[in-house]
Length: 611
Image (cartoon, rainbow, N blue to C red; front, side, top):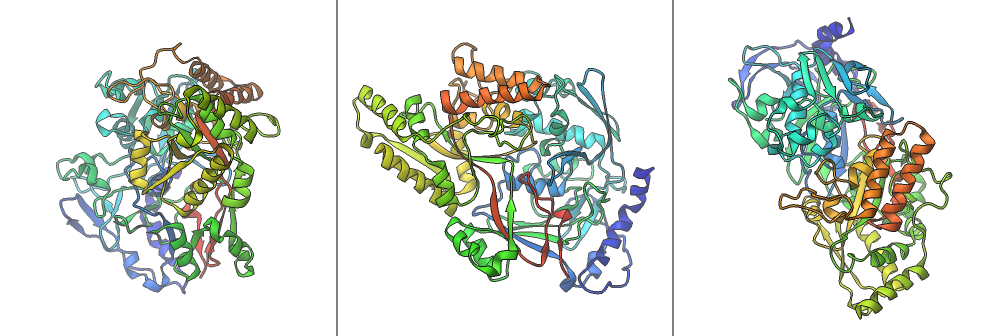
């Protein structure tokens, strides 16, 4: 019954939402319906609620990101925080993570049934949610070739998952769906038959997903952005639509169905999303109170300057400005603590000398005083002794594992390096090491502080190189230097998403940082992991531990398994150097009513701007 009501209210809500403006409500506007064809796109229904709303009444949230362009808003291709943030506002998954509690909630699925063996999930899809686009003036529904609205169906979710897994899409994040039966074989080209993948639309409102094994996080995976519905007709084309291919995400072409949709994307400059009046809001994903969210693509210093002049509503605080901001009483009520389930770290290339030697990697790790780094340089975050953020399920907790992980031990660091240098017949100043980070004032200050620690303790002159974000992502994946700045924010709140999915090959496809750290050393010409068990005992043990942890139902035993895996990662193999778990301070304008998030992603449909 509730779904039928949503179908009736989908247009009415779009009209009613314009009444929530800062100024006194305007008379209810007349809805104008018009059938047109725009630049080869499908015929559309034009509804004009926004057109009657005075510009001064519109609520626009002004944000910043950068420097550099947004990498992508293609559902299948996103790998970074800002891309995923945008996608999650413009489309909605079967399930959705609550930003305040990290708990999972049903979103585009109104019901889910699980088979007796715990492997097959049958989802009932919310009905009456139309695909929409912004035509340069307003948000409009998209019509099919018969002139009817295109509603989001189970077939769109099936297509979305299969497109992400299709090898031709080249999705770097397809591996996260490998828990689905047949997904790995299809993605790796072992079969070209998509029907072998355990995802099937039984009808327009029923989707069935079968996983390889039962796991507590299967429902999280089903809700990830790479498993969202995708619009086949605008990507590939149909009888009345010109397929746009990889350009389907550009301004004027993009089609979504979430609480917001794309308004305009000016590459390297700005991007805006606008309220979707056709989104049938509910308690999990409400109809937005804000009309538009606009990002300027500027660096942290520029963002703070814009905030202080009143041109932005939210800004991070560069480390160099933190003391000034914290000590200025006018900012006291604007400061917010943000706790993100993520980790800042440096990743070692284990195949490039001298970081191909574990003694060098461990010496570099032990020589970094993370307490001093957080206290004096970043001034935010919690010093991390291991990789997985303690706030996610299964992760080791500091109070239960007080001796786990890396410690600051400059004397041992020096002993290890001296042993290596003596064996190689080298001096510390002869070592050639480079640390690469993406362009950011805060990343530069952090890198310079660590560089100074390495110089003071070990006598090593480490070169620093910075690159713009999109370039950096490609270069980091190529992994041609010794050390790369790394960051991981949970996709779903479970240790499996940190350890197993980041640092092990998933049925032959490298985890996100395996291309960086090259652990284990085993790749074929196509860049896939071809690893023979037994050739790297530490890696074998690590894999054994994280696989066992994924199946373990006893919480204490599961935590111990992950603790043992962490010990291998940071103390024995020394693949990474964890720096700190995320906890930041941001400035929020008094005119903004914000909803704090612990997940790394905001839900702007729950925000508001004061009248």
